[in-house]
Length: 465
Length: 100
Image (cartoon, rainbow over all chains, first blue to last red; front, side, top):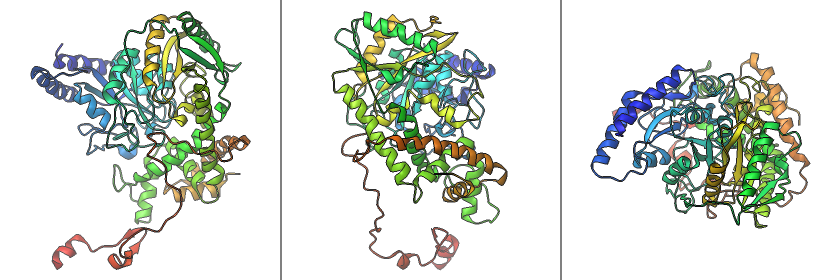
């Protein structure tokens, strides 16, 4: 099929999803798709090898592009068009991919439900009353709805794996540094990671292979080859999989437990050795995250001041500081303001040691827990991705801490910089259940190879409860 | 530590974010809840001497978080004598062109 035909089909699918009220897109146009397709078709005709020829890929709208606006779902950046292209999207284009749309997200990627978008919440494709998870909820919903086969999201504390689990798709967060952060709008720089959604492990792997690899434009990028899992693994003989007991609490949702139980049984039947392990500092991951991420966000978002980017408001005093305050007060939504204020507070004089320095040390303990377990010969960890299936819209917006706890099984991975993915392993009362695989640093390939074996064995859309 | 109106307004001033009076009480309640939640890290007693974790390649490491003097060849006052609200004041562009 020509890229031109794919562009027409993709446009029709995007239009249907918008008309259905999914609210997963923030920018696309048929002209824009057609123009990209023209370039792809010309390159293919000239004999170029394009590993993702005309594959439609949605981009979370915190990944900058020069031919489309980047809003981060914030009023403060409404209408902003970047002057440079992100490394991830440039590599997708170079591989012949069709950038399908800029997708909706929680404002500046701060949220777990995509309810905190300035442009309205994203609906769950299976139940519009529920959330798709977040913050990359638009990308997850578009893949789950069959609009695109793959999408880019970003993770700071689980923002791809959690919505992947809620929506029943594959979500892969690589080792910190394996994909360049150049052109990903910064939120928590020590945590941020461009990540991938796919309908299948294979789809996600193909996209990850294209966007990963060293980049001189990101000092934290790792000097490693692109992520390229080997094909052909048929079983899990010789693989040792740990079940961290802190991720299987007695009050775990019964549907989630049923999904994990069948996955554990399948993994064992495939020849893996299952061992019980402990990560004792797990319970401190969310509070640690909610000190470090807001602290980094308060510094990173200082640049949105009404002078250099986007919207501007003149304050009552008419001077520059009044302009900053008015612009930021009106431009940031409630969750972003809360996090910037918390971040400013924990970094402020007199509180730095009690909060930020303490959290940095606990982060070291959390990373050490993982290193200790993997040091005993455990190859991978298997856990639930989320404590429940997709919750109802509005259920957690009144209490920010209850929303934060939706990320209880995903945020430790980001603090430790590890690769992890979420894989659909069944449905509970019609809603997807996700299982999480966590790998040692730089072992992304092993994780994807094992996930592909599990995917072939455990039916993703079968009811478990 | 208790979060009240004064702490929230102080953080808002530092963060250069206008907060309306009518939303302040709700913001104080939410921030107090968040700060009380993260304070459970005080329970962690085995963190003495633990090095902060940093991802990425080993050669990229955080520098010490200390205030250091800026290494300028000439004092700022030699180049830009006027400084107001965090900005250096320079002649208007038209003025400079006229003088040229």
